[in-house]
Length: 140
Image (cartoon, rainbow, N blue to C red; front, top):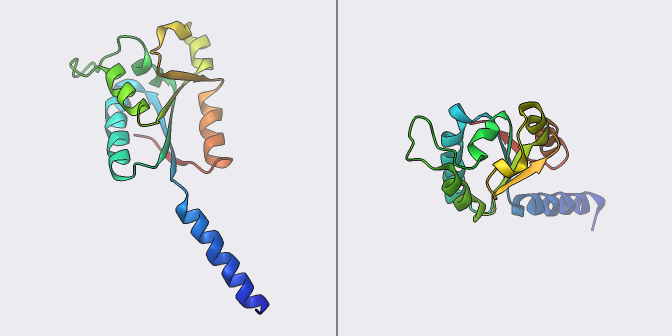
């Protein structure tokens, strides 16, 4: 086998491995009133079409509000965020709340639904998911 053929074989093998990996996407929510319902719908649709996608939802600032106990869509109070989040969590979606936001807004972890996880900084988490872990970025 020539060097050229060997390199072509390596390239094909590497591209096949990349193609076989599941997509990874970070959804960034920093304004629950404007983004939460739309974002949760987008995530559901995303998984309906590409069920193997790894999805992390990172929230900070006013984006954390839909992950609080009892949170409902202000424009459509019949939409209970906890049940929507729970259904997506069952599909392996991760929901993360920025701890800097907790400190700045004087919120406590106990005020959030059980399906919420926490990250030291939402902005840092979004950046690292993109730059270090290869996640695509979506802001609903």
